[in-house]
Image (cartoon, rainbow, N blue to C red; front, side, top):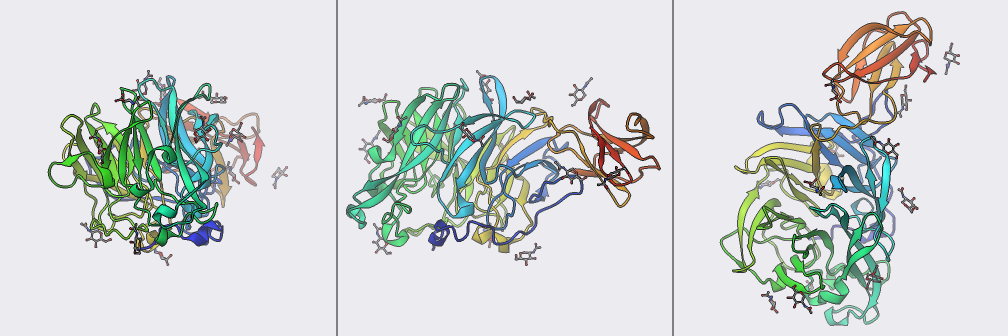
Length: 505
Ligand SMILES: *[C@@H]1O[C@H](CO)[C@@H](O)[C@H](O)[C@H]1NC(C)=O
Ligand SMILES: *[C@@H]1O[C@H](CO)[C@@H](O)[C@H](O)[C@H]1NC(C)=O
Ligand SMILES: *[C@@H]1O[C@H](CO)[C@@H](O)[C@H](O)[C@H]1NC(C)=O
Ligand SMILES: *[C@@H]1O[C@H](CO)[C@@H](O)[C@H](O)[C@H]1NC(C)=O
Ligand SMILES: *[C@@H]1O[C@H](CO)[C@@H](O)[C@H](O)[C@H]1NC(C)=O
Ligand SMILES: *[C@@H]1O[C@H](CO)[C@@H](O)[C@H](O)[C@H]1NC(C)=O
Ligand SMILES: *[C@@H]1O[C@H](CO)[C@@H](O)[C@H](O)[C@H]1NC(C)=O
Ligand SMILES: *[C@@H]1O[C@H](CO)[C@@H](O)[C@H](O)[C@H]1NC(C)=O
Ligand SMILES: *[C@@H]1O[C@H](CO)[C@@H](O)[C@H](O)[C@H]1NC(C)=O
Ligand SMILES: *[C@@H]1O[C@H](CO)[C@@H](O)[C@H](O)[C@H]1NC(C)=O
Ligand SMILES: *[C@@H]1O[C@H](CO)[C@@H](O)[C@H](O)[C@H]1NC(C)=O
Ligand SMILES: *[C@@H]1O[C@H](CO)[C@@H](O)[C@H](O)[C@H]1NC(C)=O
């Protein structure tokens, strides 16, 4: 067993990717991105490839971390690396509008740190950042959560952390030790007002932690504080109570608006009696109320590596639905989504999120994304970010914190920039980063910049980038992007075929 985030990384030694493998590049686009490799796809699963997967690949093998959207056939739809290190890419409703939300900042697994200091960006459907949300005092939002509270969709739950001095001698640490105080906040997005501010220092005893200070060596210096609790998700129920997942206490907490802990599920002080097998979870992530708040979904990381001397005999990580009876105080397993071999474990991170009649399970620190039938629990779809190469995954090669979805049925991306064209060796390559509804491209030519209107050919879109063979002999070209119904969605600039440069916008 070993600590997943080597201490050397905290000093910055591994903060630059040591390798830059497997990224895909294009002629007509500057995006450089990990492929989304489809391993299995049932004919029943998303036959029209309308599903869109939102991911933020990062890790030591990723030269250009950033956000990406893929279709379920593996086709890249959008990628953006100017944000750098990102986490928790999602599609959420705020105040009646839909937004792509993602955390950006410093920290996270890619640089070997457990928490992040950053901000959350909210983008509209033309991929413009229209809002930027942060935790308040301490400044800097942690990467783990950005959950817009339903049904009002006006406030958001975020994590933050703050290193404070603390006497750790009761658990074998220093008297003048350092503690990572996890803070959860509910923030009014419009005003930035903090509606709830709850900290682990005030409410969670050190003895609840499974983080063994003599194994991790944490808590001795301010830049390596003791990470006793490690909150990684927050949800809120209709009665106004909070539901918190804490990885290092292996506990799910229900917290009242007056800050009192109402109950604990899992860990050393669970208030629940298990009915039947499979209700346990370890180093869990992404805990949410489901099914009219009768169930909790959880990504059970299982026997993930962590610096505890407690042996966990659960090598396979799974997504679970647990039935939580808050009157009888019992818990039972309702659903378990079991992965195929070779894509069944993780060191950390992960998610379990329903989408339509499926449930999508992301493996976080190992970059698998799997979709299951909610009803039958049958595996329908499996993909990996990057190549299907197990030798890469054990040491933070490529990871993706959570796997969320939207689809072309609910999201229409219309980028501000027009389709982009490259003339390479006489062939024409076209791509339109972020356009979700292009079905074909039409090539137009003409004798002058002002007259480029002759339709030469129409080709179906054949991936993120489409190759059009013939340019004819004209000097000027334009490529138009068409929807399936024939509507022109956008047109490129006018390019010169002689040297591929833009002649006029
Ligand atoms: C547009 O294509 C050209 C090649 O013709 C490439 O150099 C440029 O980086 C592309 N622009 C973007 C924004 O991808
Ligand atoms: C809040 O968002 C959810 C999920 O997108 C949506 O179903 C619900 O209608 C929204 N509520 C309001 C008041 O807009
Ligand atoms: C997105 O926001 C930008 C900046 O405010 C705006 O120019 C653009 O029109 C918006 N896009 C859509 C689709 O509303
Ligand atoms: C977010 O907002 C802050 C404060 O206005 C600003 O300093 C920061 O540059 C913004 N970040 C991004 C990524 O837009
Ligand atoms: C939240 O709690 C922390 C720790 O007690 C405190 O430092 C911070 O000022 C509080 N923030 C707000 C906005 O109340
Ligand atoms: C921490 O690990 C050490 C070494 O395995 C063990 O001796 C000690 O009992 C553990 N402490 C706790 C609190 O579990
Ligand atoms: C806090 O709220 C809970 C649930 O609403 C209630 O049972 C409890 O008595 C309250 N505690 C305090 C100290 O007010
Ligand atoms: C939960 O268990 C703790 C002890 O571990 C106990 O103090 C508390 O009263 C219990 N709460 C409920 C709601 O059963
Ligand atoms: C999990 O995957 C490993 C290979 O990584 C394999 O040896 C093992 O049999 C798998 N376990 C199950 C239950 O599928
Ligand atoms: C798997 O990873 C190893 C080590 O990086 C590399 O040498 C090998 O080419 C990779 N194989 C594939 C199929 O990508
Ligand atoms: C054609 O398809 C586009 C993209 O799906 C859509 O925005 C537009 O409304 C459609 N036009 C008609 C006339 O159906
Ligand atoms: C491309 O060709 C045009 C017209 O001959 C010329 O004006 C322009 O300088 C050329 N650009 C490059 C980069 O070669």
